[in-house]
Length: 442
Image 1 (tube, one colour):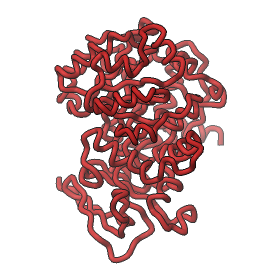
Image 2 (cartoon, rainbow, N blue to C red; image 1 turned 180 degrees about the vertical axis):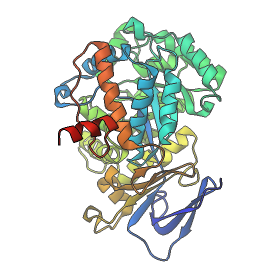
Image 3 (cartoon, rainbow, N blue to C red; image 1 turned 30 degrees about the vertical axis):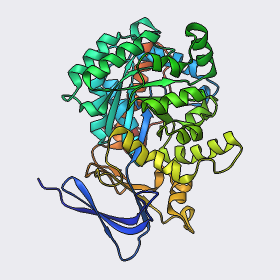
């Protein structure tokens, strides 16, 4: 069936090098045609936002009880639940995370998936992406250290990638991704690099995330973490390194020299008191820097957090400008992932800019970065296909999905033998059994 054209109107903010203009975006035949409008409407049209690092299937409902957790403690707290996980749990929780991102204007996400210790988990993650309509890249996590039952061999994950490439998922949307030096033997990186080159895949990992990681690496191997990856042949064009909070000048040079990119996750860094990544130095050295949500809220928050955090780190407001932050969430990320820039790939996000927080609007780019929020997103189009229309997800019932996710969280806790969290359910839609219970008590 031929898709009926849909037209979105607003001020087009396609690229920081092009002046915003009043536009109509016509969505038809799997693409977007942009044309000038006579007058602007109360909306903003953005290219799709790219979340370059996340773990969409959050197993532990966040609460005040976890606010003092360190990164290491938070990882340990999830292990019991990971042991109890089934593929359908991954599917539901991934779909919930994808829905949250789409409602925040994200059209593409790189989902770092681990552990992959049971059959069917990768299929479940991809099904979760597709249920919502987000464009999902998957970084297949390799984890050889830690809880034995959760570990996988490099060979097993490489074999999984071979089976999945261009069948379950296009090869261009897959990475081989050792988790980190905490959860991998250093030798894993060389084996993964060789396999990636053989299969035509790219590489991806967390690295240089904490000072303790650097200290341990130097003590054990005589090299800093990114230097170790370089010696292993892991750094190559298209390699994505996540966090990079504490690299040396030499390591930044190695990243630029090899064509590796960085994902900066400023809110996550602040949440876990990791420090300030030298993002401005990396950009100046020619390293492409993208933005990742990494379990936090949205790319709108990450854009402004990046501006504020880098200004704080250098004691100089504006060290990282709004234009750079906007590009990190759009054009730069699209280029690193191999996606078309701007609206050319058929992605579009519309924001309602009628609220008082937007005005007076002198600079749409600045205003998007510093005032935009998920609540302003009205429409999202991915590859020419509407997945959010007038604030409602097109492909999935968001209330039913929230109920399913609550069920999963409680089932996981029971299986793991941990305290079952009391959860507030969404009240807009209730299951038939809950409706009956409500009638009985009325």
